[in-house]
Length: 564
Image 1 (cartoon, rainbow, N blue to C red):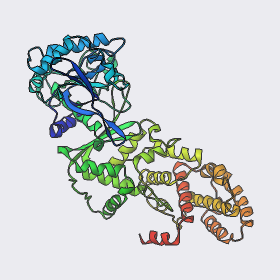
Image 2: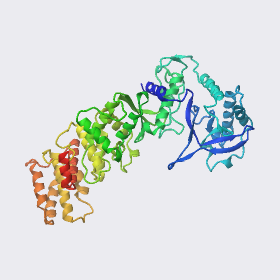
Image 3: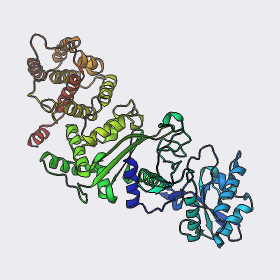
Image 4: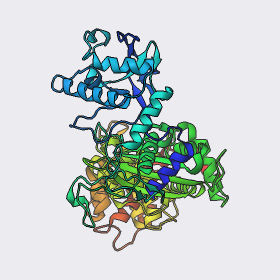
């Protein structure tokens, strides 16, 4: 199904013909018709703060080129075109020469005569002076003759390559019925490589059988991995590489790469999915508007989008051999967007003061599970699992919930992002949609873990007020983890300490009344349980967070919350 969807994507929007691909090059070997190397033209330009290579429609890059020597036609690195490899340069140049002379053997035009003469004259000299300190074996070169690039636009060369490509790589077993297109085609034994972030620099294979352990039905690693025809193999690799290279169709989720596209081209759907799944400060109002429609039971409406359009999401992860598919999900765009907005409703939680990220993007949620708060350090699998739970509306991964609890125990930081994730997990995984999973403080609930969390926050605030801002650390740094998991071992001590803190404060009545109210919500005989389980630990943290934020919320903001 994945390959079929990618082939349809190629046929719907790709303008690159079979056997060709859009490739980038850093330099051009500018030759004269009498085969003099006039110059090595630098093709990279500055695009903002980054350099951008020039792209051309060129013959496909040979697949499976790692340690072996395989020359590419019309575009290759300096090791093949200039023998710029101290160990195997001459051998690489010879392979490039054989390939170009073979393909262009019967083509007799000025451009092909120049290219053939370039290789026949042997390895060029004095080319180093044209490069700006770069290693030629690490950059790609194309041909330029008297300022004209040699690529798909040259009809004679295009026909020569098409003939070579059609005849090359055909399986000796003859034509098969392609599993993807259903048509008779030559089977493709070796598929093209996918350039995935974190994968092999030369690219990784999505379909292969490079060891007998990956095979079945009596086949060996020398047999093709699947009965996929030459056309389908080219189409899906071309479409997937195009999606990966396009920032409008790609996101990085931890160590994984997510690509997404709408059927029949799309455009607006991909744009809306991009900002709705990874919102910035500027996207707050747009998401708020969608949340109001979902809350009112109205269908999702986004400008230029067709809610019935089929939408595809493919999450990939690099591997030492083949690319791993984390998940592949397809549904109507309206359904996926609705589930995304429902996720934001579950995450919605109040933060006093300036709130830069009103709606929590995926990368920020994942970063809260790491020590240094970097999404690149996220545990493998977690990013894909978390995103899959969002777009399908399924249960959130409990590894995410446990990772957040572990980080809170370790660094004692309870911020908006962590509280929001806990709230979402309690609502979705534990069906806890009342009392404690509110946006802001709920003073009416008698939920014991939530009340205990509130009580801890009140005791901490009392300590801070008594110290008049001269504290380096509070009771949170020493007692929070124990209070959250084993309340009976900590709270009696904390209540004794609170009497000393109240004695130092002139206006302690407010805190004393609040503490009494909270204690009144607990059981008289056993107010502090010995142990509380994981979901109740989450409720404890929410009570602490809500009460702490309430201390810093102005009366005006509280009135605004009640109006909403």
